Length: 196
Image (cartoon, rainbow, N blue to C red; front, side):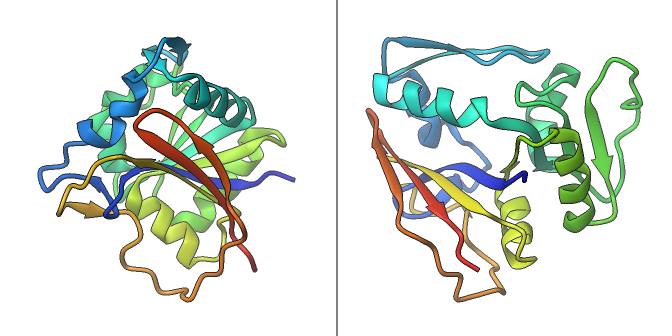
């Protein structure tokens, strides 16, 4: 059965972006090593991670079949060139943007909520896991009781303010199982099962 996995980089004090929406500091670990990582997709990128982070990245991304994200992330990423590296992307939004009904794209816009997004992404993932990205998207999934795992890449930085990953939670306390911990350079990768 397909799992839903929240994946997010976060500062030690709990922020995924600074007050202006900048994310550079929480993603510095993407360039903190010698192992080249090629993302694929329509807008491929190359990162140079530490050995620990690269092994973590390969293991995680090899099990993904689709992604759910929010409109702000979609806009910031300029739609990933039409095809996300992790498979079909389901973008939670109130309104689909103009010009995105493209025959060569695997981007889908979901206007009827997180439950619908999870159902559509799970079907598209073909038995693989569904990644969730973006603070609001992760919060919605956790509040709906649909999150199976929480993956936090804990960056070695304190932002002081900005966008919190675990804000606006209504389904609390949410009990997590024991973490799997992977040490990188400038980051600690934490993977928690969400207990039901």
